[in-house]
Length: 346
Image 1 (cartoon, rainbow, N blue to C red):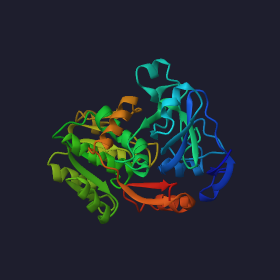
Image 2: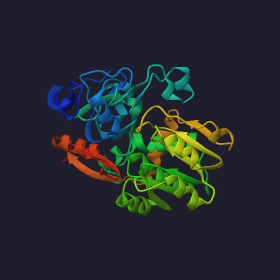
Image 3: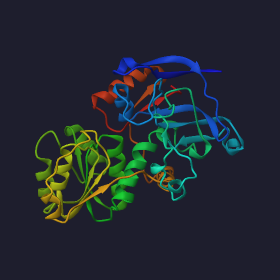
Image 4: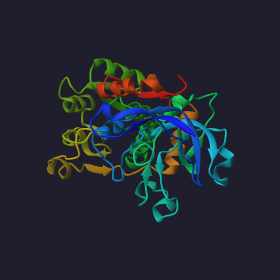
């Protein structure tokens, strides 16, 4: 049995990924075979075209961490009840039996692998995944394209804001990258919690979109001193700044906090190294919190929030399977608001 897939065979950029005809995966005893219907893109999909970033990454590689589809076959009894069911996939694959897995901390499992990074991903007609990583959903209420926009960004935001950061009603939070999947999910999660949201975005159009989504106010990071704008707007600084950026942004995030405020670190899009002024932390009782990995419970809670309508998928654009290069170009441009989704049904 064969399938079409977008396969990366070299490093360099867009030219490293081509559409190929390859063998269809065969599910192992604890796995199911999912016929992919939609796959959303993430920044990691771009970065891994240039260089391997995650230990265990190897070529040839099929990207795509956010996947929704229908289970077409099972490798063993564990997946029998899923055959024919529409599912969205949790991309974090672990042993399920170590101490970390047993206490619901899968992000620290020594055998962790990730669909679309260190396992074959969803930019293909079929993908094999463990049955326990599949979450059934109702396609009459949520399309595969909407469900594919949920997993990585939304559960990362859910964990970063609620699990790691402990965001509470009435607090003020600064959310950067308001046009990204993380940003659009984070704004909604924070508003649902009862927090006040200050969004940061690139350009007035994205700022307006962030405010329409629920941000109290949005500042254009490219137009001026956003730290001063936050402190002026709040009168004392934010309770919480979510640093999904890294690099020089970390010191800015610290400076934007009130006395006793906190920063949650959960990304490195601007770089993995930051230089900070120690006094800006200990003189003012501010805290830095490492994000860590999301839990299986948090994935279930995040998916349930979309199922019930508490959160809504924000899709920037849809592309057909043949148009994956154009979708990557859209992602590379930065000129998007929400998730970019490949619909294999188009």
